[in-house]
Length: 207
Image 1 (cartoon, rainbow, N blue to C red):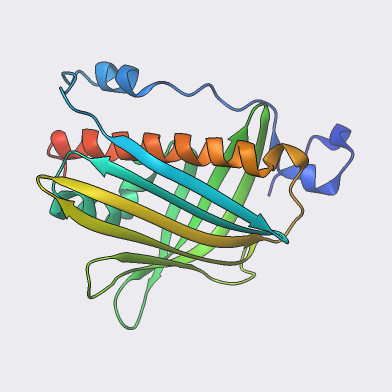
Image 2 (image 1 turned 45 degrees about the vertical axis):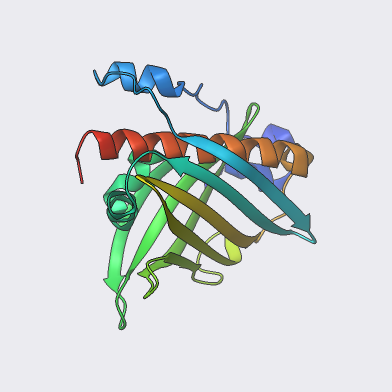
């Protein structure tokens, strides 16, 4: 974690960044890399978050106009994480798991309004027999007490219905700006950016 910005008056705010970088819209990202705008684009169907006693349970669903096989391949390649989610600043593999999968160190910013926090953690990522992808945060090896997530990938014709569920507990108290309403808005934005990024990469045939 960073150790600056003492003016906020709380030890937890040492994780803050001064200003969250302004996000570029999906169409600008596509135009920047020179790809034509598709007649269809990824969309978020719904998102929700439940906050209870320091625990956050998040859910989102998106439809991506690319086949399941391509989306799964992109998600299983950890080098793609920062490309589909600009908040992820570092992904470094540190070992392979006995029954398949990989253990990695991750650093990510999480920004709401002008408040940005930096989180570091270690997670295990596995491809499950049913084709889903599971993520497990190693307890207390970073800024989370625990965390478990799952990507469900369902075929939707030529598209993919990507369902994301995550349950995690930060080690530290989060300030009021990270309340349920703004967290839900942030989750929806993240789901949209990720879906757009995956679709863009799938169309560019980079997997």
